[in-house]
Length: 477
Length: 92
Image (cartoon, rainbow over all chains, first blue to last red; front, top):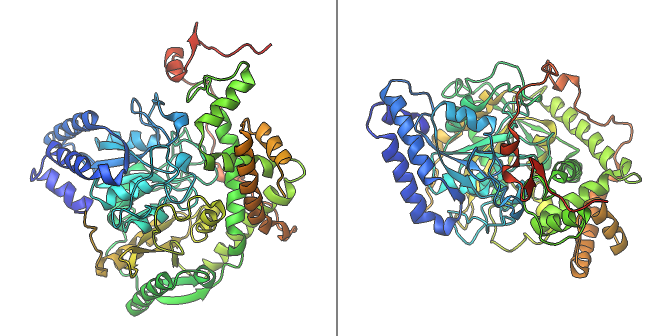
């Protein structure tokens, strides 16, 4: 059921907020032992929030998300509810404040069902680096969910929440949404406050939404967007109204299809995305072949920039102020080193090591500065495409969800799989992923629509138009 | 090319420590990762490196003191606390 219908049922008293919450909690109990999409389920808190929401509904004070059950990725701070980043380092960490995105949902009396599983510190594309064990794909539990917001995507796909908050640094909302057959929106950098989002790579991180449809992602984004004095990078541009174009005429739009995104992509993925292009052409849209020549540099540039920022951001985890503290270490430095050695998983250590290497004098210009040059170039190439196109259509990932255990131990293989998503973060643009087909094994295939900065309305409308005609399969659990 | 000496040096800068087995494994992984990162080394040096500029930060708020949290709340997540302070091993 979409969020607008759910809103209507709550407002018309066809269903109560507490009853709805209990229904979701029951499903979580039944299904999540297998899916493992939640790290923490907030049973008591959710019922209390639902009671408060029902009181607001009864008083005629319902807002768009009042009483709507939502899951929150476990790297988004929630006051009084532990926030682990799926790491041993923060296994017992209980924030003393809410992230702005959560505070804004609380102001609407939403219901938080729990905190979802993810790759440790959002570093990965499978969610299998979680200290708490990786989540499983609801379409096939032997397959990965994608990542890093794998728990968020799986929780939506398995019907364990109505919508989910995730975060996207290099594709972490879009790729798991593609793997789990749901819709994932990464807003323009600066749209949603990062206050309370535990930092991975500050110039790339952005909170996004996973939901059952494009319209639903816009519906949630309306409630969490906007300037925040606690995050200097949030935009003061007027925001909201993200679903205002859905249902409108999109036939005059020009859709760019950059050829480089299809090189090295699985045939089934390529065919499904090209079929979607034909769908838009049949509506009257102009399909324009275009090019992003610097895509070949994108993965390396992304990993250098994000790891350099991560090395700095994660230096705060020393076992002193908060987080895991080792019992070993006679002196101050040894205590810190042992706490970090025992508290961080292997992939997080890869990123910290790579980031510090890229920032070292002697390597800085060859690696970090060149990555920043590539960032300029990619932004310029997107600007050039958007001179003649309104929206860009690409695959969300080169493959569909793969078997658990088949590539998570090969960092290079994992990194190169991010090729279709990282440029959007590098350029700070908005993008949305939705299901456009299924492969021969029945796994969902994702396509992405990328828009101009702060033009979420258009990509949501274009995505929504496709979803209206596409026969999405429910996963059977 | 990463060797164990360079890995150990980077570990020191990263405030990480590794067992001998972990050091060997990390050296292999870092060698593979850096080979991928080498892709950027031949990029056009004439392009200006990107940096967030003043344009990205709109009307910064005034740099004024505002409310914070009481010490006992800040210390809630610390493992070892005494007299409103974090306890650490002796430094000197």
